Image (tube, rainbow, N blue to C red; front, side, top):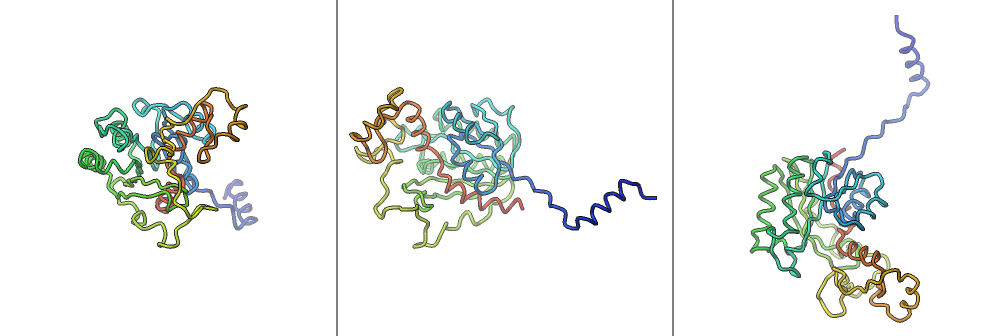
Amino acid sequence: MPRASHLRKDYMDAQNPNPPRTTKPKPTVGSLFAGIGGFDLGFEQAGFATAWQVEIDDTNRAVLADRFPHAKQLRDVRTCLPDLWRTDVIVGGFPCQDVSIAGKRRGLAGARTGLFFDALAIVSSLRPRWLVLENVTGLLNSNDGKDFQTVVRSLAECGYVGYWRVLDASYFGVPTARRRVFMVAGLGEQPPFGFMADAGAMGHLPRAAGAVKEKPHHTLLAGISVSGIDRGGSDIVAVADCRHQMVERQRAAADHGLLLGLDEADAAEARAAGNAVCPQVARWIAEKLIPTFR
């Protein structure tokens, strides 16, 4: 004889022939060298959920805590592994100072860009399904190309295969010429080939709203001219507690849209924004990966 609980369930099912579907959890992302979360924002816009972020800069980490309260923030890629857990994707723009043409080009032997190997140890331990890395195009020819070969070979030794290509943010509606190399790799599986397709047909590329026809000012490119704003922030005047002076300075000293007289926190945020992965580019990549979880 059927139990009362079964009869009750049958009755309720009959009253509601179209029960609500259970929401499928979003695929998760872990972020290394998170900065202020440009990578993470793009992936969340495409349907991913950020689980954790690793960022050593205190100002950047405060921004992350404010913008991604659902994620756990950690400080150092060299020591954080015990506090991390597996995610579906790991993203990261590892430091570029040692491969940038503006630096001394010590390559992967440098203290900063060499943190790639610490990130690799995390990837090797957690083994996410997908891995997305970003760096400046100087990585491609650093140490006569041997550093990039080392990156690709190291990923392969961990079981990751995939593609790389250079993407320019100006082709995604961002008003700046910002070329970066992106690597997308899967654990034993090739990423969707759409990653190698163009973002749009030539002549129909997205543009920023109200974008001018002139070439965008090289705000994010250091050393182009004396009027260029150094991405490292070395030519930004930082004055503590100067917000009350901003109006007066605006009348006298506007410089290509950025005001001289930024206070210390503003200067740090400006540097972080200059170093961030463009969310529009990150979202385009994420939109190629999200269908693999359906």
